[in-house]
Image (tube, rainbow, N blue to C red; front, side, top):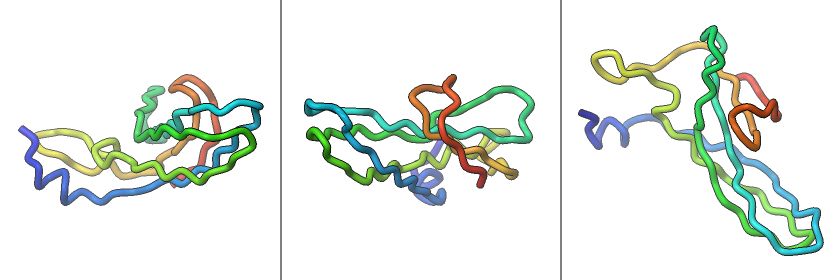
Length: 103
């Protein structure tokens, strides 16, 4: 069973994304951030965080997306960090290529 203090003590990360409404109408968009451990041979892309933003026509905002600490861990008798190079991707869904950085 996961204890609240395990979640609270996990380090947190934030991704910052600039979003612009290029349309002629007000609208909303869900910014999605995915994580993939590069040493993992499978295409296991995990949703690390998301945030909904509403914008007026031509409006631009910087959106902060909190990344779920458990995304970067595995459970093997207890929560353990998964070390290695992580590919962090801004994409519309888990199967889209998107824009990535390696951390």
